Structure formats: structure tokens, C-alpha cells
Amino acid sequence: MENQLAKSTEERTFQYQDSLPSLPVPSLEESLKKYLESVKPFANEEEYKKTEAIVQKFQNGIGEKLQQKLLERAKEKRNWLEDWWLNVAYLDVRIPSQLHVNFGGPASHIEHYWPPKEGTQLERGSISLWHILNYWQLLRKEKLPVHKVGNTPLDMNQFRMLFATCKVPGITRDSLINYFRTESEGHCPSHIAVMCRGRVFVFDVMHEGCLMTPPEILRQLTYIQQKCRREPDGPGVAALTSEERTRWAKAREYLISLNPENLTMLEKIQSSLLVFCLDDGSPRVTPEDYSQVATKVLTGDPTVRWGDKSYNLISFSNGVFGCNCDHAPYDAMVIVSISYYVDQKIFESEGRWTGSDEVRDIPLPEELVFTVDEKVLNDINQAKAQYFKQASDLQLLVYAFTSFGKKLTKKKKLHPDTFVQLALQLAYYRLHGRPGCCYETAMTRYFYHGRTETVRSCTVEAVRWCQSMQDPSTSLFEQQHRMLEAFAKHNKMMKDCSTGKGFDRHLLGLSLIAKEECLPVPELFTDPLFSRSGGGGNFVLSTSLIGYLRVQGVVVPMVHNGYGFFYHIRDDRLHSVFKCNARRPVPVCCT
Image 1 (cartoon, rainbow, N blue to C red):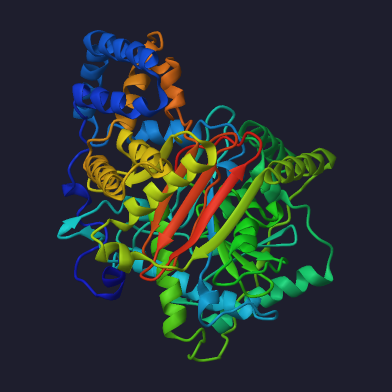
Image 2 (cartoon, rainbow, N blue to C red; image 1 turned 180 degrees about the vertical axis):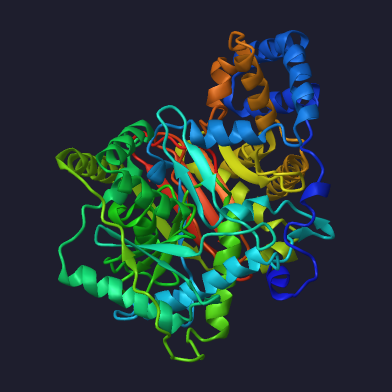
């Protein structure tokens, strides 16, 4: 990614989209074979034989018919999963999505030129925004380099969803609206929304055809902050986006019924490039401990975040930054890409603006003043109460492991990600005395509109290795042998999942075909071992490699008393490992 961001290219960002291969439908026999392997760590002999019989019955019966239906769907759609995944994983979910579905993370600028410092919030915010808006212009001009593995281009569609994108609540299903257009496609919104002390402002970042400079953006932000400091706080309408989805949908309908202008203002927020959040908090942070700022990013003030926006840039009063993003439109690699770009630009410029300080005569920001009544204010208070109650259920720790990193693991010819995954399995086994069903994200961007697949890291081989590590009688040679077997198994699974040969999304497709055909739920999906092994979003360990860059992120766990483990690996450290431990039920869709 470092080279891809640095080099210039004649290629257009989205030029390979039409030539990408369609998402394949895996072999039914192979998927069921892999599924059976994945449940072994969680079953005794009798339970396994029962599940084996259920799988065989499915394969020879209804499964074959469902597979044919799925193959027919795949002939008509270049990505047979895309619409289903968006709906099932995100838009149909009724739990509050800001806390349970969104992802976020603190910026790493504190590790070089922007350590925490009061009084820098707006100046740094204007520079950060300027770099982000330059990235937006790269996308509009299609000058962002195409991501590739070797010479193979990856799908870039998710980058369309980074700016000017918003989820809109519905009674039974939400919708996703994307206003982004490339320059060749036509008009794209060019305003941002700014939230401060329960109030909302908007201003255009283009003036007379040119992008505002940091001093000009600073003038706008200063105006907003000073106005909010000398006047009463606003009602905090944004907090409604943190509500349970159906309640938010009804509250939104009522808000619009009070005054048609409320809809106009909602649409201005929805179509904004991003939301800039002026947060009065001043979280502690060091390069070795991001715990407090990460907690604030994920569970901070809901009146200054629009939970449904694809991009909330959070600016704290001590000049520390983070982001909180809706997960529906894209996966973490999009925000990793822009976060790395901005961090590099800040590093290269030593955190300063060296251009002109001249400020043109630019219109002041417009405040969006919603018409509210007692019911709306009660809805806002209720939303905030449930949000903070559920946020209190999370324990979040972000530490750096500095003994070694990628350089040493590669020297030992061990894949760094697999190394972390197996270490996680061993840690869980030692802590709980049993295997932990684990989800790791694999990307499927080799394919048209590909997103993710599930790697089930808790394999038979991994469990055997964990058991050997706990057995004092096992020789070092045997432990090493079993470790290498576990490494090989995990590496093969990751390769299979990335190349369209995973099984979890395939099983999801088969279950959804059955639902569409109004058939009874196949026994495969009601078998206790299906959920015990993690099926249906029941993974105790929800994990993802964020990359090998100085970028961090976190999502809450999937299940009650589950763990969320999100990490990035540098040459000399396994940095800022995130652990979220839900003490009470906190359901969430897959990353």
C-alpha cells in the first residue's frame, strides 16, 4: 500500500471494475467438508457423528436443490452475495448500529508531529481536513492508484462509498444513499457538516472552483466553535442516530412531520462529504497506550457524531483525532487507506501548513436549526440514555507489544498474521481452558464488488498445538511440529477464503435461498454445533488484521462475553492490540 499511495499512475481508479471476475459459487461438497472440519474442536464424538449425518442428509437432499438455485442466481448477478450481504449483515439489523456495527479508531499522528496539546484542535483539524479533501479530489479525478496484489487489480468499488454516503433508517430495513460522483460522472456534493455541542453546521469546501486552504477552513471552524461557546448548546438531534433502528426511523418520520425544512436539513447532512466532530473531550494517549482515546472514539458523545455517516472525523480538544464510520458501505481497508494517506502527509509536512495564510471572502457556515418539540427532546434523551448504558458494557484496552514484530516473524519464515492468530488461540485456551470459536476477516476483492469472507481460525491443528503447549510432557520438537501444522492450515484457509473458496458466505447463501423459496430452515442451521462453532454470527473471538501500517481500528465483539481483537503489525512491534470485552450481551454483525 505504501508504494501504491506514493507512485503516480496513468491508470484510473475504477478502470478495471468491468473486467473483474464474478464472485464464484464454491462446490457444495467442498464447502460442507470444510464446515465439518471447522466444528470438530467444539464437539465430542457423539455430537460430531450427529452433525456429520445432518450434513450428509443436507448434501444429498435439499442442499443440492439450493445449490442449483444459487448457481442460477450467480448466472444473473456478477456478485451473487452483494445485495444479500448488505441487507442481512447491515440494513436489516435492528440493534443500535452506531455502537454495535460501526468501526472506528484513533489517528496515529500523536506518534510524530502532533502529540496531545490543548489549543491545537482547530488548526490541526483544518490541516487534517485539507488532506482528506485532497484525497476526495483524487477519487473524483480517478487518480487514486488501483490496489493490486502483484499485477492483479482488486475491486475498488468500496472507495466510492467513503464520501457523501449515509445510511437512512427504515421501519424494517434501512437504505444506503450514495451521492458521490467522479468528475466524469457529473456533480458531487462538496459541503461538509460540522457538529459542535449539539448543533449542526454546513459549509462548502469549494470556493470559486478551488478547494479551501487550511487557513480558510480554520476560519470556518473558528466561527462555529466560538458561536457554540458563547451560546446555549443545541438539542443534539444527532443522538437519535444512536438509537435502535426502528425507533430511530419512527423518530425521523415524526421529526420530518413537524416541519418539511427538517427533511431538507437531514438531506444536507446525508449528502455531506463527511461529518467533522468538534468534541470537547481531552482523552489521554501515548504511543504505548491508546485505550482512553479509542474508547472515546467508539463510545463518545453521540450528540456530535452522525452514526449513519460513512465518515465521522473526530477532533478532540487536545488536538488528538479519530474516526467513527458506518460499516454498511465499506470495510476497514478503505478507512485504513485514507488514514495512512493523511498520516503520511502530516508526517511529510511536519504537521504544518506552509502555503499562503490569505483567506478569501468566503460565506460563513450555515447552521441547521431543527424544529423540535417535547417529544423529539424526549426521544433524544432516551437515545442518549440507552447509548451510554450499552457503552458502559464495554471494556476496551489498547496496548503496544514492543518485544518484536513483523521483522522477526518473517525472519523465522512465519506469516506475521498467522503468528498473531495462533497466539490468540493459545491465550484464549490458557484463559478459558477450551477452544474459542474465532472469526478472522479475509478479503475477496479479487472479485467484482467483493468484500469479505470468514476464516475460522480455531482449527483442529490449532487446538492440538494449544494442548501440546499446556502439556509439560510434550517435547519442544513435538510442540514445534504441531505449531507448523497449525500455521500451514491457517495459511491455506486464508488463501482459500480470499480466492472464493470459503464456506461461511456460501452457507449463508444457501440458507437465504431456502428462505426466499419459503422452505423450512434446513436442519444444518438449527444444529447446536452450527452456532457453537460460530455460525450465525456467534463467534466468541471477532478478529481482524488492520494491516502493516501505523493505522488502528476497533469494532465491538459479536456476542455476550466475547472479545474483539483488532491489530496491526509493524517491523518492530505488534502495535496497539485492541481487546473489547462485552460483559453483557452486545450483538454485532461481522466485520
